[in-house]
Length: 181
Image (cartoon, rainbow, N blue to C red; front, side, top):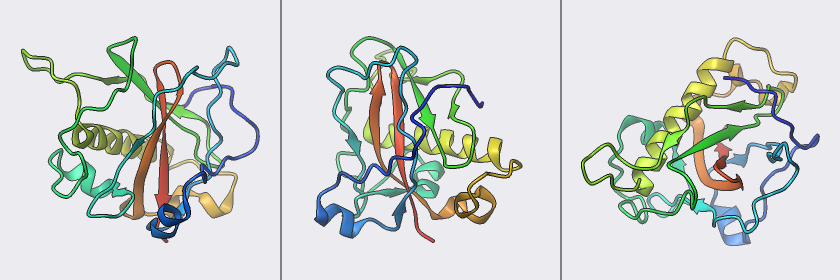
């Protein structure tokens, strides 16, 4: 669902990676405007970014994460990182260049639906984020983006990778996505 969330006017490339990680990325980072909360304050302090390393590549192909919540080769696959210190659900925001800012409507539940209410693991998070990026992709597929180089019609979903999630405000995360042309 598109939203009218205020964001910075210029794109941010999220390129604050060390040279060894940057050199091993499977493509180029999609330049998104970093989300800025309506109240204008960033998270203080933000939770650490959640990085995805799959088969020693500093990213995971979204197609693979979407296909199955069980991801052999994902570093820390069954580890449960902290997504929130205050709630039971978080929001994913995507600011794809040339398209309206997007966030999913219902949020990501941070616990599974078992009796034990286990926190989400890296592999479950990757799967849920892949589903939401695909939802964004499907929502925007019929829109013509204003930036020709980043129009979704010319970028196959199968060529997208999730590099990491960045904590951008209380209860909100923004995926860093890589495109391998």
